[in-house]
Length: 221
Ligand code: DX5
Ligand code: ZN
Image 1 (cartoon, rainbow, N blue to C red):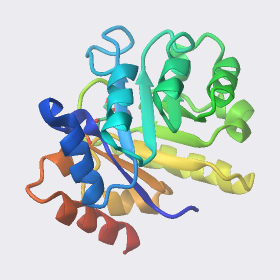
Image 2 (image 1 turned 45 degrees about the vertical axis):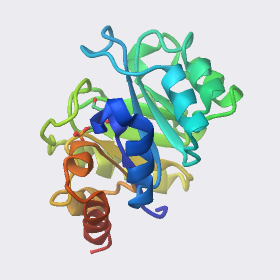
Image 3 (image 1 turned 90 degrees about the horizontal axis):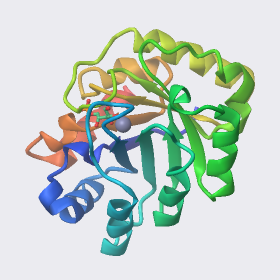
Image 4 (image 1 turned 180 degrees about the vertical axis):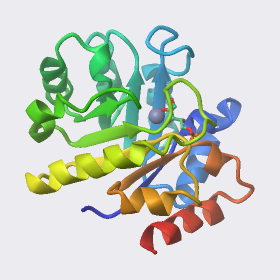
């Protein structure tokens, strides 16, 4: 298992001061920037595109940017995020006609690749593509909005994917996204996650650094 990464989701940042708020959460101890892309088609909400990512890089954000694509189709837009400065691009298998091809497209564009599983999506395709991935993302809410409640069944899914990764001896990160906070992050880590997205829990806190520190303590416990 790899060292823990905390990836604040800037979906819950102040969009009118996105550069400053992103810099603040990184200064407070965030490791990656989790960048949620929603298209009002695959999910019922609309957020940010490649231009916004590019603007964050121009503003001076050098941390890894973890792009979570909640868009359909994937192939036409994914390379634009790579060009804009993404480090890792994850997509949902249901949103791509040819999952293996899309993984190749992302890697050929110079980014790491991840696959995302909704609460009711089966993990079947991992049998065939796990060794081509850099990250598996388990959703613990239905995608589309920040601030939802953690769905506990995600813990069993994390345990299953952790087993698959370890059995095959792969260097694949296991990420959780949705309803993560300092109270449940310990159980999430125990279930096998090593990469933790948190939006409302961090940006809703008065002190980002204290919140991130509390999360790290709970993970280490
Ligand atoms: C939901 C997004 C999440 C969201 C998490 O569709 O993928 O990344 O920002 O927000 P919280 O941590 O508030 O559940
Ligand atoms: Zn996300």
